[in-house]
Length: 246
Image (tube, rainbow, N blue to C red; front, side, top):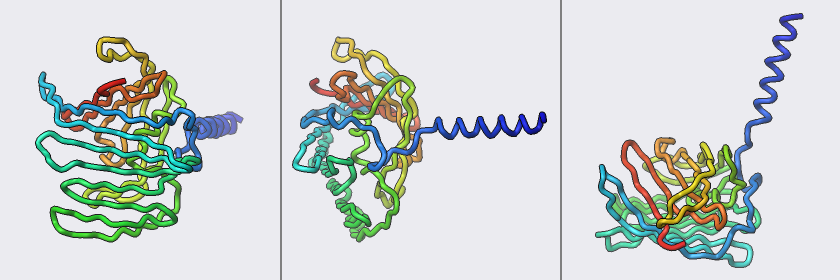
C-alpha cells in the first residue's frame, strides 16, 4: 500500500507540474492584447557602457504602421561613424501576428525572407560576395525573430510572468530555423525616467540566437506599454538603449 501511495503521489505531482507549464507561444497560440497595438514612431539612443563611461554609438528609429490586414514594422539604425543606414522591414498579419515578410539591408549583408509553407528569399553576404538562395521547410508555427521584442509589449504581463515563444531566424554564421525566445521573469517595479518615477514591467529575456548567453532586460511602461529602456548584457559587455521622447 505504501508503494502504491508513493507511485500515485509521484504521478500526481508530475501531472500538476505538466499542467502548470506554459505552452510555447506561436501565432496559433498567444494571448497578446491587440488593442494595445498603435501606429507610432519612436527613437532610442544606443549606448555602450565601459567601466564608468557611457558612450553613445547610434540611434534606432522604429515605425509601426497598420494597413488593412497587416502590421508593418520598420526599423532604421544609424551608427556613429558609419555612413550606411541599417534598415529592417517586417510585415505580420494583424489577425494572428504571423510573419509574412522580412528584409534587412546593411553594410555587411542584404537579406529577404518570404514566409508561407516554406521560407524563401536570399542572403547576400557583401563581405564574401556569396549570394545564397533561401528555401527552408518548416512544419511548426512561429513569430519573426525581428518582431518578438515588440510582441512582449502586448502580452499579459504580471509579476512572475514567464513564457517561451517560437521564433524563426536566419543567420548563416549562427543558427537557422525555428528557435525559441524565453521570458525568464517579469517584475513590477519603478524606473527613474528623465527624473520622473515611472511604473514599469521589468522583463528579462534570452533567446537561442545568442545561445541564451545574451540577457535582454526591457523596462516597459505599464500604462502606455512603450519600451522606455533596454539593457543588453553579453559576456561582461553591456549596452543600453533609452527612449528619446515618451
